[in-house]
Image (cartoon, rainbow, N blue to C red; front, side, top):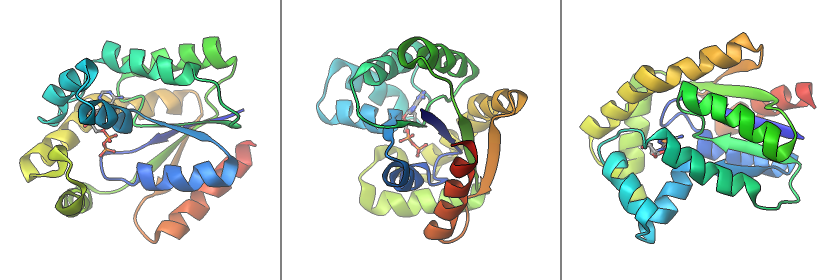
Length: 192
Ligand code: ADP
């Protein structure tokens, strides 16, 4: 199995690149952000809870997010592995994912691919996306800056954990989408 953690700050292009990697390597993407948005759209209890955090640019509590992820990992699939997009976002979630992948999939995380993009570019990309996405968390600069703040406060340390395991690879997330995809493919080929 190939199990990829796609990592990076909000707006670094995880969703776009996940799409490329899925097709190239026949993987199943699990995006916690997409799952929350699906629940918000359908006004489920989980969606209502998540919305109260997401609209402020804060992280949803670990337990809620992890339970949702476990349900998704347990669904049967023909894919050759998974791309985790937007999870893990805390040290606690990183540990939880190790365990989930071991217990449910009888496998390991293969690599953490980290997209590097500087903050001001992120803010511009997200404001631009907000013009068309309808995402409340992209709608104003204050919320966007809070998401980036949350990233440094809680999420950046996830990178340190994968570094310790020797599973951390950085890729420049600024440039042409196809060029960035090419670099990601090359990294995945190395671990296949
Ligand atoms: P982006 O890729 O722009 O960072 P996502 O679509 O991944 O945004 O996530 C949107 C929001 O959903 C996050 O700002 C956060 O509030 C919530 N969220 C997504 N994944 C997680 C997670 N693993 N833990 C906690 N909250 C999460």
